[in-house]
Image (tube, each protein chain N blue to C red):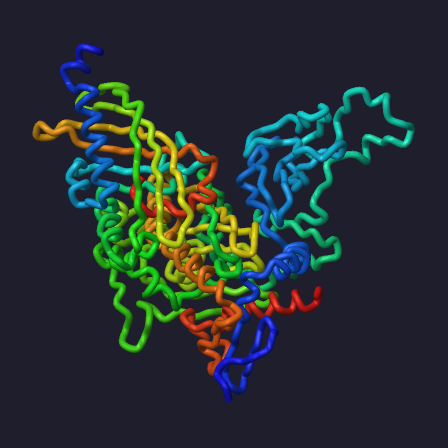
Length: 166
Length: 429
């Protein structure tokens, strides 16, 4: 497996992708961010009480297929997205990046995140958790086929809405 | 005649001037908040949970209800209880997990244990107590009243309250419409809980849940999403919304919107968001409804939406999907919201997945609409800091019309809530 891994992808390449993605999200360059995704990508935020659940059977906080994800970006860019107008300032720290498996053309990877979020008229909020990614190479580029942001908080509570992209 | 009143009443209603005002002190005052706990939350029927959440003997959920720590559980014989999660000995929680299946509740402080029906089971070293110590009287305290309507369980901390059936009154008809989605008449809470705080007064969420006037301005990005998905969301000339719905007074402070549907509904109105392959399945659901209920009732179930507010703090939204949510104030300017999805027990995997997907197009802390509601409520709460200078919230829309003509974009149904709230607060003042 290590040999396959080594020939398919390196941790440095995965880290570069994650750090680049974090920068795009923190800079609200969402159209560029969409280009990091495959055409069938999905984005999940499981409910805090069922972090390991499947979105087909469980009510998630977010479970976007690519169609809704593109609509989410349209919404976030609209000044009438009141939950993100004025836009919040976010700063995310990504760490503990690991490649966790390879299955066919799918590379699984994981990372921890801490996202500080500041917003006018609002309390500072800190979103802590881990990512589980499925990555796929497309036209030579490593792309995101699935991203799952799993929050450690027992409930959203004072984190409030998840109105920006985790 | 001045448009706005003066004085210090919480509610000022003037039928002659066709005005209805709420004093914003009710959203910020610690004193009002404390009085509400006694006058409202200790006297009304408060939603605890749904029977499907504790399906098997021994199943339990813990949650705060009207400010008390509660164990909502099913005993070994299948009876449902709402026990106060507080050891009779020295007061510690006897159950500190969110949910599970228990043979007993064990207090980790001194080791007292209780049966799932609340009876005291064992006390380490009980020979140290005098002859008056009677284990049969030392069980967990149950909420004074626990009653259910169609598996929705409510508690009342007032032993003398009217029964739940009478309390719900006409609201039961609307609960029935929601439940008629299920061929067996059985709905279930779907796994996965949305729990989030809103930094705003709880009464604002009652208003917001049924207020269709805000849809166009607050939720334009959701409307865009629907439009991009091929749904016709253009209102007819002269109307604010794509269809003309009504606000209904259901008595006892309960109210609902009653709207012809224009958006997708898992039961049973297809839109392109669901995908082409869902068309036949939704048609089959529709046929089942017609066969079971007849065409008129089937249309009532499938082609109308309702946001139903059960006084004081339970909302059932039957729109893009069905959400059950309740909320409790933890401070005048902060509430804790818990929301679930509700669906027919017999749904297929594909139907369930579609229902959950549809839920998230609109509802919840990551949805396309709810976060903007939260933003609106929090913006209002920030404005209320100036309640002394700008004291009145205006809920006069539709005052000139008779009850039956109140549109969902009017505020007649919001006034229903406020009149009941005021009546209870004045009774107890």
